[in-house]
Image (cartoon, rainbow, N blue to C red; front, side, top):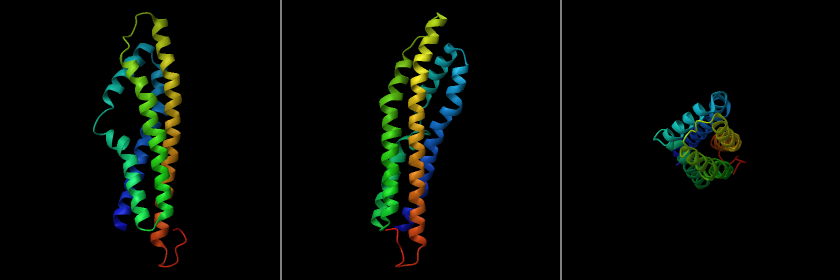
Length: 176
């Protein structure tokens, strides 16, 4: 069971890193690029990106991250690696609430509302639509990015504690 736990711990790190990287890319390039484009181009591009993101490449990291972290935590507890288990559980809860649920409660509804917008011919109207969307969307994206980074750190601490547990000589483990 310890081999499965190690494998899942590494997979959890990979999943947390993937979803953090996805959110981070929106922070440091995508939204800045869209903000520098004409608003009608930004709206059309965001509509296209939001329409394409629901796919088999994105889904495992987005939906699977809390699952793999929870299973890793359970296996850690089952193998008496309690401290590691608590870190993976913290990673699970942090990403689930601050990444997945936040996205579903805030960013997705904003994206769905933007998808219904027909780009008006009036430049002021289109500029207002984009600025009303972009600023709050970016705030919530930055929030989920920070929380996903924290979850990644928690998962890394879990892996570290698991390694400490498995590397310690028998009977000399202080990381239960």
